[in-house]
Length: 133
Image (cartoon, rainbow, N blue to C red):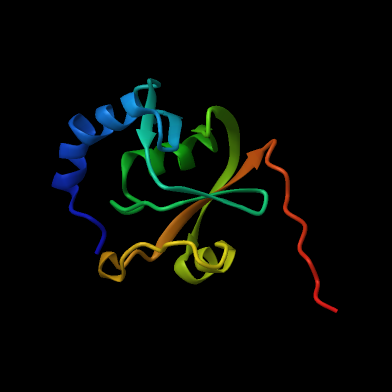
């Protein structure tokens, strides 16, 4: 079960503004589905081959996930630069974990996250896969 919705609402007004001020976490910049307003949400983003994998700790019904899927694009501010994201899609946990480099910390099992958001990153170099001979 993802984190409870009441925790998400609390974080929206406490944790998120503090994290945005610090400027150390990845921030997804997305447009509201109905408001058309631009939002910034700090979150977990992992660089993977050709894009980024996002961990929706509050579940895929979170506004930021729904906004990105509806728009079909977003921007990601990470490590002092911005990356354009396209082709967002939900993938299952097995597919998500297969994309992560070995040793990457995974979300706690008790969250029971079943889906993750994957998006292509324009300007993100594809890492060459090395074949072992």
